[in-house]
Length: 181
Image 1: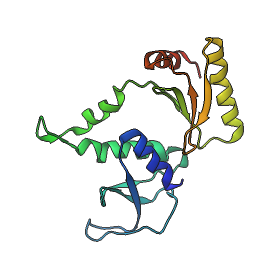
Image 2: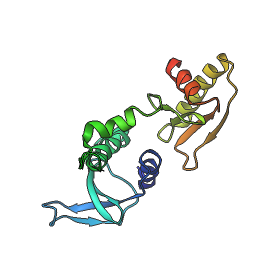
Image 3: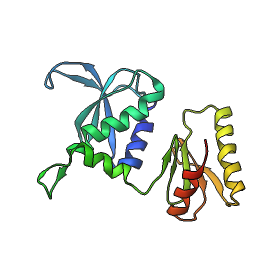
């Protein structure tokens, strides 16, 4: 998987600009060595995640290419978001509170679909053209059956396909929650 995909994901989901370094030597924190000479995340390898100019945490890529995004999101929340400082309690916010920020958002998630202010999007980057066309038709047919007008577009990075509905978040949430995959 190209590093830019995870960089864009971190920017979109967490609002963070990140970078990666590949770990080429393991050991205690002061013994580890990293390289910036790579363009793709390889399954099963460890990468340093750079935030604000320094390696903030190590990301262990899953052995399965299908789980890299899920693994990255889980590790980002547990190793970075959960350790952010809460100025009310004067302690790190903790994993439970960090996860609740995303779980209790105003979005509905269903499989690789999610709601937004503009409508419904789905992660299509790993889909071949046949699967993408079937997925697009499935949601298109559902929206047409509900008499919902929409247009489509790809995200700038090309890894999300969007259904632009613009009926308000509560309507988008309802539509996706009723959608049968």
